[in-house]
Every structure is written in C-alpha cells, then in structure tokens.
Image (cartoon, rainbow, N blue to C red; front, side, top):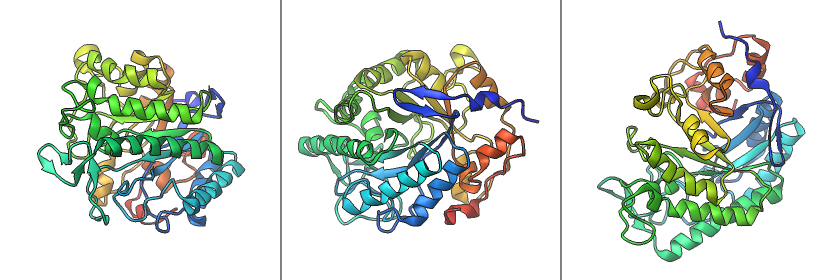
Length: 367
C-alpha cells in the first residue's frame, strides 16, 4: 500500500514556469515521426499525457541542425520549417490540454543504433567507446557550429511557445562523449585529464544557449554517470569531482539538473552517507543549490533496460519515492515507461486508484 502522495502534487515554480505538480514525463525515444517531422499522432501522444495530469512533459530527444545528429531515421528534428511547424502543433495541443512542455535538444554523437546515416558520424575523438573507433573527430569549426546549433534550437523552442528547454548531456551521446575520458582523448582545449576540463564543451553549449534564450527562460540539463556503452562508468567518483563537474555548468546558466540513474533509490555515494543516502539528484542539489529532477524505474518493479529485451514490468509502490521527496532530496520526479503504457498514470496515482505497470508491446505504438 503506497503512503499518501500529497507531496507529489505540490505546485512548483521557477522563473516563468508554473507546474501544478512535481511529476515530469521523462524523455523517451519513440522514432515515430515522418522522417523527422512530428505529425498529428505525435501531437496527440503528448496531448494525452498533458490531459492525464503530467506537470511537465519533456519530449523525446529532438536533434539539432548537424549533418549526422541522429542515429535513427524517424527521430524528430528540431530544425527546418516543416519540423518546427510540427512542433508548434505539438506545443499548442499540450497547452490546449492544460500542460507544460519543453523539447529535449539532442545530438547522438557516434552512438550506434543499427542505422547508418549518409555521412560519417562525429564525436570528440572519433570513438564510440574506449578503443572503439567510429566516424570522425570534430574539428574546431565543427565544434563551433554545433554549439551554435544547440543555441538556435533552444531559441526556436522559446519562439514556438514551449515553456522550457532541456539539453541532453547524458547516456553516452555527444555532450556526454566530451565529458567521458573513454571517448574524449583530445589534446586540445576540449579535452583534458579532469572532468572540469572535459566539461568545457558543455559549458560553452550552456553559455551560448543561455545567451540565445535570455535570462528568464528555464534551462534544464540532463546528465548521467552511466553510459549506454558502459553501465558502470562514473564521471564523478567523489563529491569533490561532482562539484568540479556541475559547478561550472551551474555558473554557465543551468537552472535545473535532470539527474538520470537506473534506479532512483540508489545512493550515489553510499560510502559517505550510507545505502539510503542521497541519490544523484540529491547530491546535485546539495552541491549546486539548484532544483533537480530525479528519475529511474519510478512506479515499476524492474529497471528500464528490460524493455529492450521485450519485457514488461508490473507496478510497484511509491513509498521510497515519497519518502525522499518528503525530505526534499530533490524537487521533481521523472516518470518514463509507466507513462508509455498509461497516459492517465498521474491521475490514477492521485486518486489512489492503482497505477498500471508497463507492457513492452506498447513500445510499438503511440498509446
């Protein structure tokens, strides 16, 4: 039996953003646009989650204006007249249902997903993982153009009427490939032996984006320790290293850190504050003083990698989540797979009606 859920339904305010509750729809790749352009079924998919009570919707990853910024053919673009017109329809539909939404702005770097673009993929050092070559290393011109492309996408998000923008800096994609010493072996100013040095690219992306959107538009940055290339990878092995990583990003203009981990209840540094200690989002909030979003198998019995094996997951109680939110460890909680299967998951939780689990078959359609 889940304890009272009132803490999940407190409002949240940041700059011009007013949310009716603390529940965020996590970004989840669906690869179901028409060649990169959102259409009516994509708008309806997000509208249903807004109508179902989600406080803030973060879109699936939407890619910037670079030649090889996506790793599947129907991942949505966030550039070009047709795609942006499609996204205008999405945000209008979400607002019509009383929701709030931001695009997740993305570049997939050199990651593999079983589809090959026409041109070589780009990354910091021409690597997809330690010692695993793919594509080409980015030039100074590539880097400058990519930074500008992130900023343009965020400015377009504001122009179209979105409520926030999120930069994807996690899970082994481009920004994260600059962070990680396994994929960034550059000897110039974009590399370095420390996480502070390797964070320079992300810092410059954040600065350019902040300049493009202005001071009053909320900017979220999604980060992770783990990579799809190595689930055990860690960028920050101590709180001091985490401060070296997150501090410059906070100063550059990040408003909210979206801290991805596979299970939200796992302590980030158990050797310091125990097995029930602060998670990644908790430490990020402690270090930066900024609001944070946590995520990781919320409301489900089983982590999300099982979905890629065609496995579903039954619902599980929210007591661990509620306990952490009651002690204000983090500010918002992102929900993923549960919202794929049930657009009304939030309303079911609030009503105490018993939320559904996740059915892997739902990945094949936009429920």
